[in-house]
Amino acid sequence: MIPCYVVGMGNPAGVRRDFAALERRRMQAARLLGKGYSQSEVARRVGAHRQSVSKWAAELAAQGRAGLKKAGRAGRKPRLSAEDLGKIEQGLKRGPETLGYETGLWTTHRVAYLIEQECGVSYHPSQAWRILRQLGWSCQRPTGRALERDEDKIRRWKQKRWPELKKRPKTKAAPSSSSTRAD
Image (cartoon, rainbow, N blue to C red; front, side):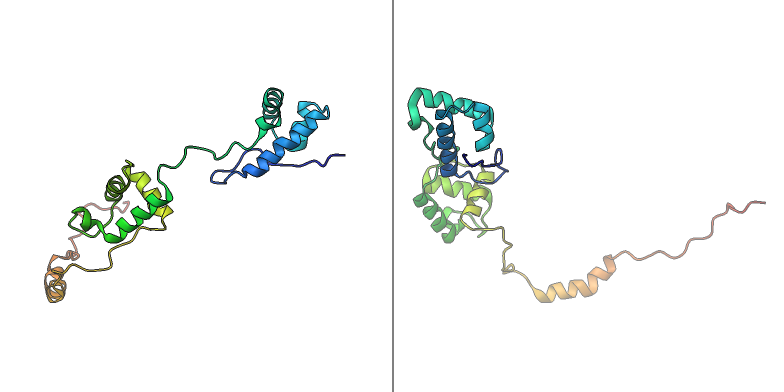
């Protein structure tokens, strides 16, 4: 008897597909179809939809086992190579001032501009954030304080001006003239 494999249908979001395992499953289906099993029985045994087995059977008839070989990667190919990602990383380390910005803060708009300058690929700022995460960068607050900051003036403001501005409870108001007591 041929062992029965129970494989989940589909993949949860964010889980990468194992293309080698999928190819093994298609090849197992081809063997079972070759032995005369029905498409429904093959689907049950390999843990696939019957419609998938129907497609595999058509491919098998048209192209043989070569038609069931690994399809390769899923989705669109990346627009940035590993070399491009290295250029972006170096640009990030140089800082946004090298692109003519006044402050040393990277925003997603600035990163998208950097990517376009370094690699010639245009990205929306939301996708620039995805690339930052891919490179291991995270959202950070600046560690430094303003150079113009005057600690003495801040302390005096907190001690003198803030108490003047701070709201204080007003004195008690006179009691209301209407009575809530029943006569």
